[in-house]
Amino acid sequence: MPTLIKNGTIVTAADTVQADLLIDGEQVALMGRNLPSEGAQVIDAAGKLLLPGGIDVHTHLELPFGGTVSSDDFFTGHRAAAFGATTTHLDFVIQPVGGSLKEGIDEWHAKSTPKAAIDYGFHVAITDLRDDVLTEIPSVIDEGITSLKLFMAYKGLFQIDDTTLFRAMQVAAEHGLLIMVHAENGDVIAELTKQLLDEGKTAPKYHAVAHPAIAEAEATGRAVALAGISGASLYVVHVTCEEAVEQIALGRAKGFPVMGETCTQYLFVFEEDLARPGYEGAKYVCSPPVRQPKDAAVLWKSLAGGDLQAISTDHCPFWYEGGVEGRIAGKELGREAFHQIPNGMPGIEDRMPVMWHAGVGGGHYSANRFVEIASTNPAKIFGLYPRKGTITVGSDADIVIWDADKEHTISAATHHMNTDYNVYEGMRVRGWPEKVLLRGRVIVDGEEWLGAAGEGKFLRRKPFGDVL
Ligand code: URP
Ligand code: ZN
Ligand code: ZN
Image (tube, rainbow, N blue to C red; front, side, top):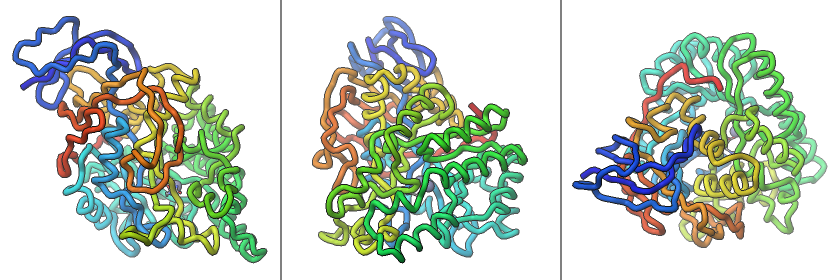
């Protein structure tokens, strides 16, 4: 039976319009005033906004990392995402040591297919660019994957050298693949880490000392320059600081095809949080590290003004107290020394409400710009638009019925992520999803979960995504 959402206000990146929405099957079939309701299941959205489902293009579900595995799998992570108004995400396949890209892709499909409850796609992270892997790169397009990730940090684990980055960029430019980088100077970080440990500086706060902002800016500038030379489209993930934004802005001013995202936590969590009493700071250890309020001010401006095009989460959750009560090991692994703390934070559930509340409510940008950075631009850049990222005739009916007046206090006691802490604990947000539809089906209704494992679809994406 078709679904008619009546009396709502549709907010897209471009427009805010009052219109009814008819969903037939999995897609939006019709938009207009006073659409007839005969034969349809009716949802009354009077006084509510209709937003396209959020798209989080940077997540790590069930990622083996830091001596353990991130604590959300493709079911718990998807359910949490849906409760937070996100209906699509892109996760990072990691090329296995000595293996092919295809082996990594198969591994990620095996983890995700039976559990998926929202729609999702993959990027592939290249860790070992042997000649056979270089020739393998274009075949990822046949797998529906159109973005490659390279880590310029995590020495001895994921880190690649400039030759690898440049060669990957050249192939990417030829085939319309997007290059994504984790931009930090991994050699400098490894050396600073060693020196700090030798001096007995082992507390979580030293994580930030080992990862200076200028080391992020240096790597960002290097990646931007290589993109300029190779012609590859570049998307810098988790940009944290003023100096790195400057490098992206400089590249864009020169006409290089470079873009960047920041992540929710970099707007709300700061270096001082790493120095919280006891071992609390470990909760906030991620790479690049959280910075200073003055950096957050630049990030807000860049999100509003266009030098950063998207907001994601880098959702990579670990238990604070892991290894007990059936929990996998977590942040406690680094009690002896900061470099052993698993890097990452939870956030897939919080991004949309927090970025609405502080971004729209706080006057940083309009509701339309919120939709643009949280859904539309991610869809355009990553080859999903207009199937995802907007509300229009023919697009997937991933619709969030958003109550802009509803208030909610964020807490680990009520969130759905598989972690024992929430980075935004106690934050009272205004603006909350009332219902969430995935391809026309209500999967979240208030506090009720109506989705199911196995219902999320793998999204095959198009190459030559937009450069915004
Ligand atoms: O600390 C982080 N960011 N963990 C996830 C892996 C990455 O670098 O994105
Ligand atoms: Zn990273
Ligand atoms: Zn990440």
